[in-house]
Image 1 (cartoon, one colour):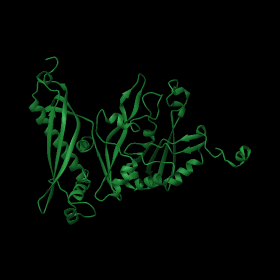
Image 2: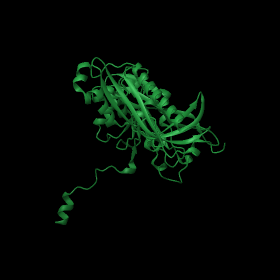
Image 3: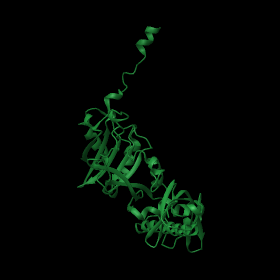
Image 4: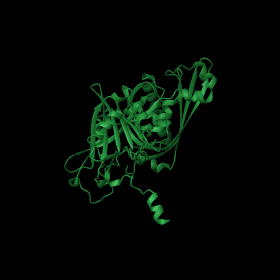
Length: 373
């Protein structure tokens, strides 16, 4: 019987050997000169977790690049020059350029990743105005973990200073499928000036804002100071705010895990939204003597200004970044049905009212004075 079963039972003859495959870590999609350009980032597995690895031992990452008419055919073209089988089961992120978003390639990229049996819904999504090939060439500051850059370990850096929360493919698909939703994709760019060693500057990836999209339209990018209001209406960990007197900084406050709530005020003909933000603050730096009341007053003014600034920037792009339409849809469907147009409601600069409540913790008289007067 043992001999019989040895003859009829199959073994692992059809299993791919791990050391005979290259693993695609990131996919980039661009649109240049009326053609789609696809990039595949493949890390050198010998550089992962090896303290003895140095740059002289070989490249830490390799980037493949091809052009064509659709993403799938381009990837198959890359297959023709691949030296080993390419495996997409560990793909971690997709980066789309502004031109790719403008030409509707986001839907094409999601459709491909959703149908391909090796990929998963947890792939992180990013947008950029920088050169994608340069972004994919970026590795960590040290050679022993080449793929653990900011975009692959975003939660780690997000805990230190929260600006834009990451989004994976599943979450983005939900946003694009729901009425009144705008997809909010984190925007990244190449930072060429912050980091350096003893011989040269080191390229790094920096979060700079968001790209706003719908299922059928690219809205635009919101970057820099114009996006700071979003952090108060998403799940943030730590937010640093500078307190000014005139144009002079006098203190730095870190606000921890802010909470927000949106209430609907129906005035009959017009609907307004009250945005309430509440947070605890910790004084981390004092440059001049300052009172607690002055800190709280300044923080309230700054937070309200940031929320309004982001809201108005999105409004110029005809985008509902705070998803006020969804709030009305969930809470007062009849009113939403009455005023909605293609899933969205009319909004203007007077549609929001902002109220902020701040509580300073671990604060006493000596902590509101400079350590050395």
